[in-house]
Image (tube, rainbow, N blue to C red):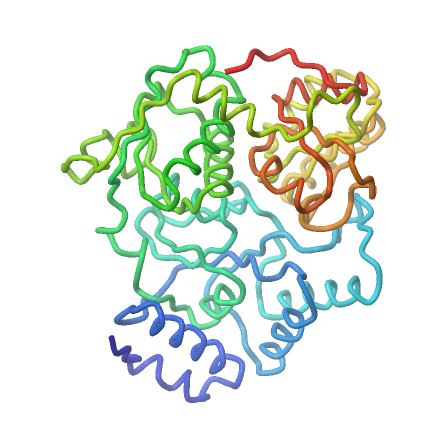
Length: 419
């Protein structure tokens, strides 16, 4: 399929708006050609995942755009970087990598991106309108944007995300097209106990099961009674995008494109129906742990995706002024940090042993102690999926209450019932 640039896009590719913008337009246009997109479409915003340091080439690429005079053409928030620029936690990244990571973060600032540094931009004020086309990176942000907000984006990887932001364009394919957003599968949770469905652990557990079962298929979840809230949907989508390649899910009666199952299916019949049983949920929950009956834990990490203010409220309530034996690493964005600092809540939590991590998280950069064979406890389905490979720690999964009680005791404590 031949891609034709518009009269507005061609001069950008030809360099009339500077070398940086020209490079970005060529990247977007060539990506569209490879994807079989017939055209480029305007976007309303972008969320940039490409500012996380993985090697010098990423830094040099961003600096090349800056040297070419490039600037973002639309609102562009930034996902986590490799450094905690707020100084809350110590990142064990040494030179020259540390300097290159800092240069990379600075380059994206100079490109005009907002210094949000969060994987949950949708809880930091960046919530594109229903039906709008955007170009977002970071798997959990993409799935929340598509599913909960009803905006339209594909999973834009490094460094196509910043190229889209600079040009204000994205390839017209995939989930930008309404016909590709129709569910073809039903994921029925109506057989699960109401007590389990009302618990915090239900959403990461079901998300991890959903991702493994559906892959990249668009499905609709049936049998959910009432809106579970943004934090629950955040946890579900993040886990689903970690175990599968989920970019969009529907929940009947909850998400905006699914007032009911029939509408989500485009008034057709599903190609498959998965009826989730309590045994399936229990197995999914067990799979989130890789540590085998440990006697002690070495760390607790929460906040993948980044903790909201409401989740900090819950953390404070559960800690209840007790000193922690094992530190809880609580990852969040500076939009939440500023509110915690306003009335001394950050300092009070830190005095009890909570390590607040801002701008980044413990799975993408070395913050946890280097402890081969260590055990990390978490309530995050996403942390559970990535921590063993990225940190070297084995994982023990539990609820937030379990995590807090275990951090106080220094050993695994489970107060929440299994699925």
